[in-house]
Length: 87
Image (cartoon, rainbow, N blue to C red):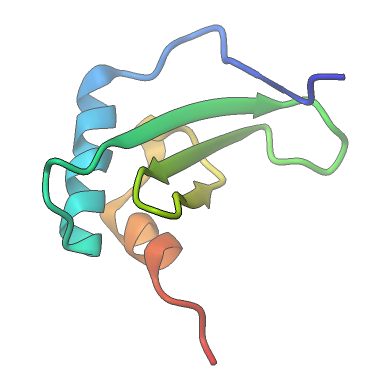
């Protein structure tokens, strides 16, 4: 059973580039480190309707989830999602 499906409308490439830029800034990454951004729809009860996953291809891979479509994500949301966990 596939709980996540690709949305019918693709995310705007400019919004994806903006998110990648913020991720490089926040994590202080070299531009040689690949970043993948996926916008997913969930059809499971209780799951947010759209989730954006930012995958940073370091070793190990780091993933960050934001419960909003790519085009609605703010820089502050990226900062919050990538903040180290509180002790």
